[in-house]
Amino acid sequence: HGEKLLKNLEIVEVLKEIANETGKSVSSVAIRWILDYLKDSVVLVGIKRPAQLYSNLEAAGWTLTPQQIEALDLISG
Image 1 (cartoon, rainbow, N blue to C red):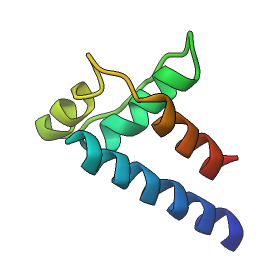
Image 2 (image 1 turned 90 degrees about the horizontal axis):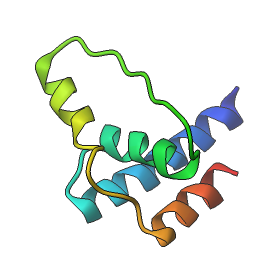
Image 3 (image 1 turned 45 degrees about the horizontal axis):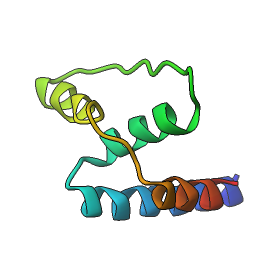
């Protein structure tokens, strides 16, 4: 379990870096990654507060660069 946790933390760090680059939230970058990387996929999200809705909506209307997708692919593989 420890190795998986460390891998997940590494992925989150890359998501944070991309969030800083793009000015988006980490959750919107994660959603965008799924939509850009896994074509024909659907993302289902749960929200409890309006702020979470707005953060998730940031995933619409833009795409990750090929370099950003590659960085996430390398770290998650």
